[in-house]
Amino acid sequence: MDKTDLKILNALQADARISLKALADQCFISSPAISARITRLKKSGIIRDYQANLNFEKLNYHIKAYIQLQLEPTQKERFYPFVAGIPNILECDCVTGEYSQILKVVFESTQALDEFVNQLQTFGKTSTQIVFSTSVPNRGLTLPDDHDMTKTSHQ
View 1 (tube, rainbow, N blue to C red):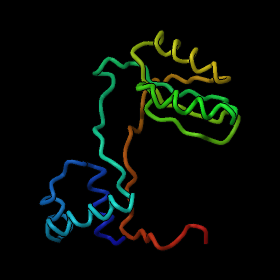
View 2: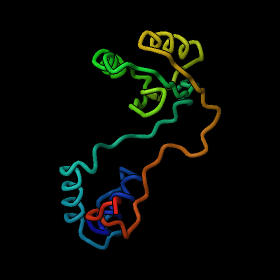
View 3: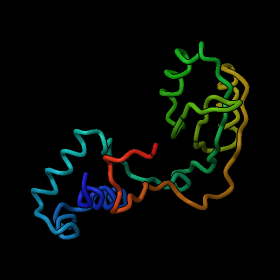
């Protein structure tokens, strides 16, 4: 991974639909070379996928919330397929602390959120925070040009 790869990754995070020509112009290499680098970044798993960032409020999903859940390890086998099948869950992470799962969700109303939380409580205790506003929207990680992927941060 070199500075050109990092430029490509930063550009794709800002606009995944950027043209190969525009990327080539930014990186001062040919479009076929850009295409080959992107293919290599995909094959290595650095680029997982591409998504559109949607404005959920304009789609009538006015309630965004974070739900913490105390989940016993024995329930994971039943819980993971359950959450995978709920489209309102934007993200679900296994975390440290009192609550072992944290879910980022969107719903049309507080009533719909309440109904979902009631379903979740069959797995354990929950704590829900409804989002009033978002000061930093979902974004990628801007990688510094001097980032060296061969070094570890455990020095």
